Image (cartoon, rainbow, N blue to C red; front, top):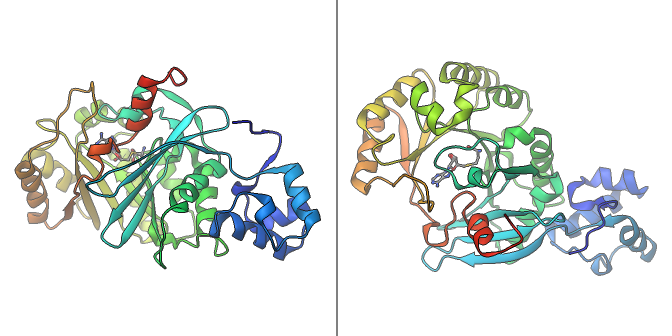
Length: 352
Ligand code: SAH
């Protein structure tokens, strides 16, 4: 795909930025934004309510669709759909659409690869390439929704694809503003969740954002020895420091947070692990999402049995913690973090 990188990435701009940058009337910025984000039309010629001259300006100075679909897989079992998208520099990212009864959730990537290299995650294996731009983040949502009739439903957004959102802070924040804009997808802040591996500085910064966007922290272990092995970022921000950042966040925003815990057999699935987590959460109003590990070829882990996962959940519940055991939804299409990109890379000469 030939994309002129000198041109303005239109999908990364808010209505008022479009108007100001292209010297258009405010309502025209809104019209253009609506075509891209609400109608998901990227061809300027089809933007029929724009004067010819404006369309010509767009053609000359802007690009709309920067991403190109490489592959779309759909799970026949759960309806989960996963897209592998090619970026202008030939890198690829994955995005996932999850259907759960009448809910639609979009799982977006924030980076190409990931610098954090959590021990059980497929994304880190391929290394870290670069941050995504706001346009590249938002276009993932637009692509996934292009073929999904929403019938009045608003999708949920989770930043749980490839990458660490707080290592690409400004672009992620901008992409959230784009997703929330009423002229476009108009997604409510409470339907958006940013998930971090525990970047304490990022959490503290996020506490200052004036909105109701949700925060989720990937814990996976509640003692420093194990957590540093599973989530190497823990060496920089050990659990005491992480707890401090969380307390700051909760104190400042009054919002509840969620903890993610990927269950790994005989690694972090014992009753003692549950107890440590409960102790770590002491005094916090927070819920826990438990996810059995989604197998990644070549990594030395396994998901625990259903019974063991349930026992872990019940141990938390007994201690007064709200915990839910997530049904794994994408295993048959390798929808865990970084998996499709990795498999594709193994079969293609383009991606290393
Ligand atoms: N970097 C961010 C967001 C991306 S990962 C973070 O760490 O939160 C989203 C979640 O999926 C994290 O909780 C991550 O630890 C988890 N995860 C990664 N690989 C997984 C796998 N193979 N099976 C289950 N969960 C996985």
